[in-house]
Image (cartoon, rainbow, N blue to C red; front, side, top):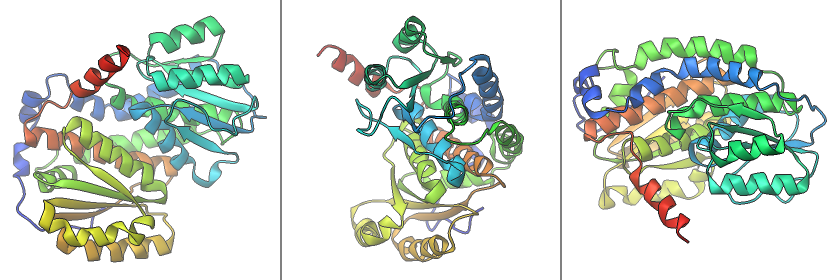
Length: 361
């Protein structure tokens, strides 16, 4: 799973006990992460109960979503890989791509149901006459969908939006299957849930102090992580970044290979002069051989300028298993890092303040 190791002193991973986590995590974010397998299975049931229409003549699919809702679409596209037979695109702005037509299926994904960018896309899709589907736990989006007779995938309430990632991945995959963008993935999703249960045991809070997730979090403490992906792992690298941002309440950045080899790799030469930076490379067991060679060389060249460096690989056979394996690992690392920093992973106060200020304007 990893061929990298910390090059600097790290925190003691033995401090990441269940008791230590509970002291810092009063809202139980760790429980939501450990429930990822159950969320995958529950999501399948919720999509089935929504009785979505079959429309395999769709010209493509757009997933409109922000933050934890939007990343589900990107991860679903990665899991599909070359099984996708038509375009599948994620939009994270106030409108739809210019090529969207009435033949396009638009999945509007907003956990809260009040994300203004997604609501704008819902309205735009309606004006175009596109086939709309909604995935939400409530809010304005649910109200509009019911008024307009738009198919609605009901998500469970009570989660932080970022903790609903399994629901968003499954919703995107199942809508893709029903509109002809990809094959049915229910079997792969169910198998991935069982596979993830094994990884929960291996990396969860009851695992040994030296387990992989605890080792990584301990090595990252006190540094700014930069997470790089390639191919299937690009959206997973972005998920790691956003989870460390929100759970650990600290800066984290992501990059994409091979592009970073044409610019960012040079910037690492000055990293020790500016601060403490850590490098994480997310590899896929099924990646192109040339990408693997690039990742090997890039990690080797950057490591001397990083306080810690890790090379991690997906686990599993199918695209779905491999995607979920590193999503789980990143979510746990971000939670453990929050515990080591002594910060509550739950609240995202600055986001709420931003939304409040925007609502006044």
